[in-house]
Amino acid sequence: MQKGILVYVAIFVILAIVAYAFYQSYSGPKTTTTSVSTQSSTLTSTVRAHGASTVMPLNFSTTTVKYSSCISANATEPIANGNFSTGTYASWNTTGTGFGTAPFNLTYANDNNEYYSAPWSGYNGMFAATTYTRGLSVAPGNLTSDAFTVIEPYLDFRIVSSQSSSLYVQVLSNGRPAITTHYNTYTSPSGTANPASTFVNASIPIASLLCRNVSIRVVAGITGSSANGKDYIAVTGFYMGSAPDKGTTQPVNQTINATT
Image (cartoon, rainbow, N blue to C red):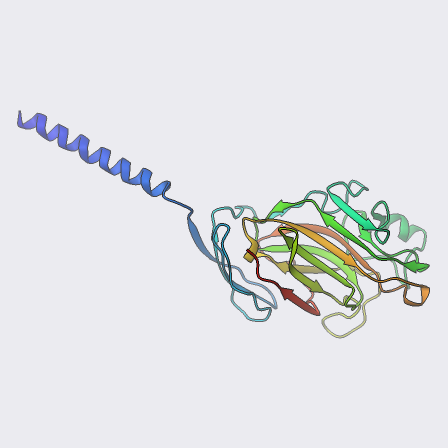
């Protein structure tokens, strides 16, 4: 009899342990803390699934991100047609005429001297989205990606842009600007001049938007002629990453709006 009681007690204890473990695994979203280092800028952000986060300053040395379980286990995650490798704007939408009807073939452009002063460089692949029009004119237009879920803390890409309040890259949340970033790639971090056809690495911290659906919008609001033909923007190579690209250029300015 005593042996039978001990067996029942042992079974009860085992069932209790299993029930507790089950409860722990399904008791709500998990959060994890990790540190993400950058070369010249970092961020501090607390993010929970579909929750709010702190504003991200650009210049300090240690990054701590508290995030929900939606973050990818991979170092990088692609964005659909982020390199425009299809030779089309598949997975992107254009408004206005600035970006034309298809991405710009950089290999063809270099073979046919379609650039300012120096061949296009600093890119990978073959195509870029740009308002460059062979120096004849510049026209306004927007380029917007299809929505995707943020599962990495950085949006990395390559860009050519003069410094202008009318040229910038945005991250949209719920169709509204969450982050707006301006660049001047014509000057390198060392202060030397870059050709107007040199792509540089760029990175936008998007940890505050983890687990949310967002879109990328590239804005060119300049209209003009050959007199301001170099006031164009070119972008390619979009992907999400666990860290910024090496040699990432600093933005001229960045605005981070509250998101809900």
